[in-house]
Image (cartoon, rainbow, N blue to C red):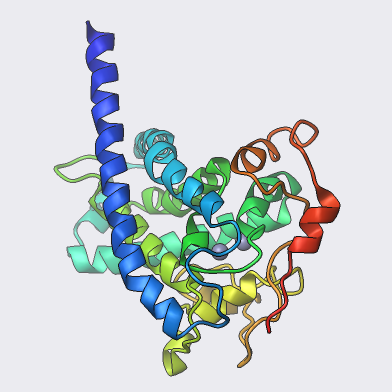
Length: 291
Ligand SMILES: [Zn+2]
Ligand SMILES: [Zn+2]
């Protein structure tokens, strides 16, 4: 009976998450489709090459990946709470919410920066992260093209220092408020910096990431080891990976072979010998040059 209730609960949670994802997608399309139409870096339209794969990743990550991520985040929070001395968390908990929120954004960004950088520098992690870089062009939906292993790893890297530094109440009435806000604000901004938008933020580009900043991260091999931050370019300046010329990239993608299909991209990092690898065809399709 208990297992019946548990599966019923999980099913209704998945259904509600699916409905929320549909609603969020409608909002994203309503906001970004017209903007990308009028202010694009280059005209590719809403139905760009690989858009069905991006859409598949959008629902996989929004509905399914979020389940193990929530469990692992709760597990991480409980583990860290046990390890930390109680006086340590009390000092942070005494700060007002806005101060904790600002500190959490900066500390979460630090964790994300290193998680993302490791995903590029450690070959095993790169196998998973290469899925994200396999997009031949960049637009708002490419934000969701991420292997679940890569997504869970980078999000946990983002959350771990928040728990470690005691900025998050791991117990209390709203234990998930700050981590949820950090993740939500980060992912909304991520859609924006992936957008195919020829906009520059002027002086604000010193303090906030922009589409140009992240487009350079998606360049075909030449600058993909730059601009790891999701919101605060300060992290890249601090660790020597900042790169932001006035121009836009000429080509996007990766030389790492990656199947075009969703199932191929899901399997490829797990078992490179099992998934089909249309190397010549894929590499020819990557790195599209701008007109
Ligand atoms: Zn990357
Ligand atoms: Zn990206």
